[in-house]
Image (cartoon, rainbow, N blue to C red; front, side):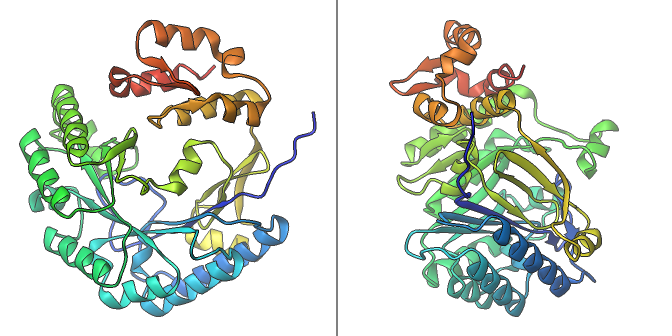
Length: 383
């Protein structure tokens, strides 16, 4: 059967520079000092030009700029970068969701004004906690005053789609500290909150400390208590939990991330970026200099591989069940030409029987109890 692929409608762009490296971070990011930022933007423009020549965008619906910390770009660098994005990925400004990750320590009014002018209409601030001791302990450079100031500036400039990232399960974090952070966070009355549990990743300072038994993490029970508190508090404040870690006022769900969770294709540009197009996944070269060098010779791709049909179906279930509305049979049929049950009947039955999954009119979703054991459910769809 010949499969035809539509051009992606989502664009991810990676800015790999940071003011410093946080203790838990394993993302492809590099401390800004002494980095060739303008040369990196040149390389990024070469990659954009080649990418759209091979796969011209038809209808860009979402753009997401992540990092690193994209807001470490100086206003003139930011202006140039956003002009490039508009040139190669033109989108209807009234319809596109154009998100940028921001660090509260690197977003003054001038920077925000350039972002607004350049088409950014959604900002995701990496806050992590409203406890200054905890922020210092995890290696963040900002404090809570920086957060208030950044959000106040963003609102003043007319940004009306703001999100913050928070974390739970951090070293020495208690349920009471989490409660206080939620009090402050909800007091800001934002449109969206992403709240993640700490994962101790390899090649991080936390991983080193963990292996030396020097990372005082909360117990598993405390972590579950924090998560249940988060869900209860956000729901009571009028936010809909639409994904395991994400909560939004109605209509403010992250459209870009939903593309990932619906297993849709997307452009991925920049050092270390991942993309998914024409049934193939690719990963770009990670290092700044190697990425820049490679971009002079062609697409700076480290590896590219066809996603086998079986794997694509497993991916569909694993990422789709993160959404609280679950997976839809219609989407599965559209992507694979068969019903979910044809492929996964036994696995579905197992979780329905254990009451971790529920049937919906459209397909399947995690039950209330299943949300707490999601990882176990997701992993079971891997052959």
